[in-house]
Image 1: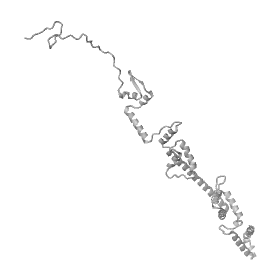
Image 2: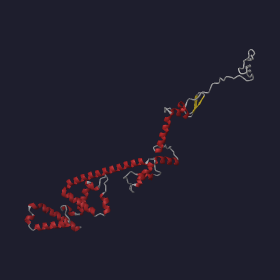
Image 3: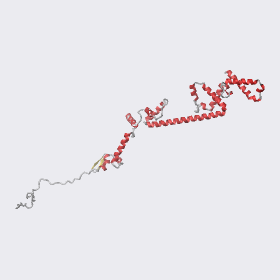
Image 4: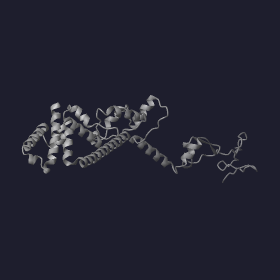
Length: 315
């Protein structure tokens, strides 16, 4: 038989005890529903990394602060890995030595020294001459001028590569000008030789040039070397000039009066004149031969030989 304890009307029955369930604690307040909206969440990293890198802060649903110009620059990258790749490329370039720092308009000595070391400029102008191109040698006579040249380029922070290029170009120009000068001098010399050859004829040309050489041979060797390289006001060498050579030939004849009477290649001119006079005097013993029509030129030459003989005796 089952005993039932019916609950009073309006009361809930406890299924375990069969008694009415106790009433809820009247002192316990009822739960209050919260209606405050949640704070807006910042976009995910894929959408916000540019703003974050530019220094922006997400607040109340919008980005605040930060650098708008940097944000614009970051817009060049379509995704974040490109930023990292750009950084690595820059790092590689700097470590390879290809990166060249900037130099302010008025650098301090320390800044200038740092810059020169970074780009490879020597500490002093003399350092340029330690890395000259292969085959280039600076002579002692050239060092003063080239040292001034190096100082000017050093003031402009020119690298050794640029300095060497300038030096090579300068030497090429100098050599080219020297070659042109030599070619021009040879051209003038050949033109002068041809003109004198046509004026004097082969025999006289040889006689006169040998006579001039004999005058120069009497000079001290050091003076002769400088004298033979003497230049006239127009830049031509004196012994390449037609007028100068004619004057020297006349001077040689004045010094040696018998020079014009003797054939080219004659050695002792005085002896040669005396010998020819003796031959003429021997011929005079036969008047018909000496005064013949065919012998007119010899008689005229004999008169010149007598004049030269008298000049020899006066000297």
